[in-house]
Image 1: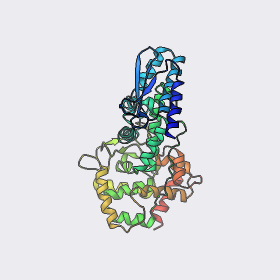
Image 2: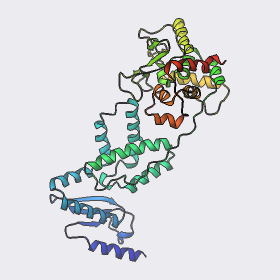
Image 3: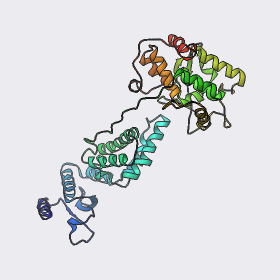
Amino acid sequence: MILGLERMVRDMARQLARGMGSFFKDCGGAKPTRCPHPYLIRFRDALGRQREESGYGTQGDAIERLTQLYAEKKTTAPSVAAARWELGQLTVGEYAKQWRPRQRRMTDYSTGEHVDSSINVHIVPRLGVRKLNSVTPMVVERFLDEMEGDGVGRGNQVNIFRVLKTILRDAYAKGAMVDDPVKGVQEPEYVRGTVAIPSLAYVKKALKVADEDLALEIVMMTGCGLRNGEARAVNVDNVVAQDVYRVCEQIHSSTLKPAKLKHRKAGEFREVPLPRSVREAIERYAEKNGTTADGYLLRGPGGYCTEGMERRRVRRLFADLPPEEGVGMYGFRHYFASNALGNGIPITDVAEWMGHKSIEETYRTYRHLMPGSITTAARILDVGLWEAA
């Protein structure tokens, strides 16, 4: 069978047109078709310069690449073909480094962090040294298999693959590859697990056990649907009406300072229902502890309540609480959604109040709703929070 394969490859090699180039191994083995080293190809580009490329696993791959180069040379202006070849010689890591600063519309700080993490932690270590013109759908498939084998979570796999696909498609559009490198590659399937929502009784126990700073965070999350960082930035100046709280910023987990909201541009805000019980909790805390000059309630040594401070308090909190399967700090935000949806508030309103990027995210996580208004919601949420006690 091996002899037949070698004969077939020799026949293919003889079919290479004059000027297409040649392929070989430079390892010096007596039987190069059987050694594990990759094939090199040698050819002349559109400007007549001799070029070499390496990394082809089989003779068939080498011949296919020579055929592509020859066809491109015949149909493309010499200067354009040469520029594309030069671009294709960049490695994935080199191109990603050039690509990243051009993403000027990537305004979300956390999104930029996630993209950088995908590139530096996953893409570059696995594909960084591979030349762009050698990336094929099979290479991308192997990349996904490696992530799966390394235990990377499906949600992370989806995000990492999307970053890689964007980078490769950008290079493909500029002519670095002859064929689409991700054509036919299926995105990893991610099925969101069921979120753990604490009961009202559990929320009340948590408020009794928590220290007053963490208790105020929990109140903002369960009553207004704020994210942790947004709750850490609770501010008396954001109470813009008796039943409306304006969410303007978050205390960022990395910078430890006020930052723009997730999925929002700088200066953008959202307004959420403010139940009476939540407003009164804000007022009691402010009366007892005061506020900063800028109206912030929660403070730390650096001026703001940080994620690290929260994390230490949360560990103590859940150590003193009876276990409730799957419930963590973020479960208090889930409680807001469950309380709203269970009382007939429409999902479009809940998606807006929670600051989701799209309503699809809300649909994937929570149930559908019936119509309601922000003022009605503030009154309804009070019932679900405290008056049912």
